[in-house]
Length: 338
Image (cartoon, rainbow, N blue to C red; front, side, top):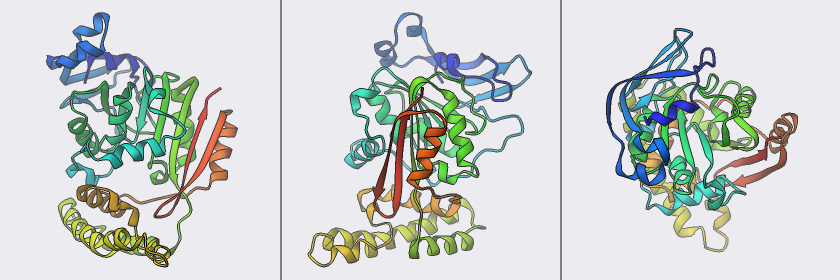
């Protein structure tokens, strides 16, 4: 945790300012002086300590990550990305980020304060930071934030925070951009989460989403059945089981799609193979995706019209909702807050 992160944090219980009480620090990495200016050049990396509020709440900083769950709050479910290592050389990661963040271009991120709400293992935050943003990567899962911190390293202006999306530990109206890709469909009340994110964005700032569209067919039925069958597995057992499924997807879905998808008359057939789009991802990411599909339930599916209504009711301008078709239908949405 970098000391300057405190200026954007707030107590998730009362919204008050937080005071930092470090107990173990290390010198700022060499890249920091290049990015920072003024007093921020003397910023320290806080490895252990506390963030305290006048209301009496006390939140620990553990392994360089502020743990800002509400008092009595429960951490999010485990994620398969606890085993995932980010590989910045994989071009599909950057292509995917640019696809989900349309209509933004790399230059649009420069100099912005950005919230990655539901950061997972940090791949989207990496590219937002590479394009010049100061990024706060935020997630409920302790495994996700640990993975994000490891994968983001010290090479970018990025910060990792653990907390609850419905009780975010940030000051209201501070972000130039906030995005949440692939998260809201896992929440019990996605509409309420949209309203929470809206409060964090400043006037003139941008809020972007990517969510699942309506699902049908065999994939949804099989996923539901497998989720029930694996509910009692330990994380290690589920990870091993997910590896087996990932191997079979590589053999019987990804490989046929790659080899036969360009052949006349066969593309329409192989395009119905389950999660065929994931042939682009490294094997470890496929394993983690299977794990998360089985461990973390999908609670909602959305239409483009619903997203347009959310943005319109919140008074957003320049709304753009676009349909994305891959393994299934999904939707990107973005708008400028008035």
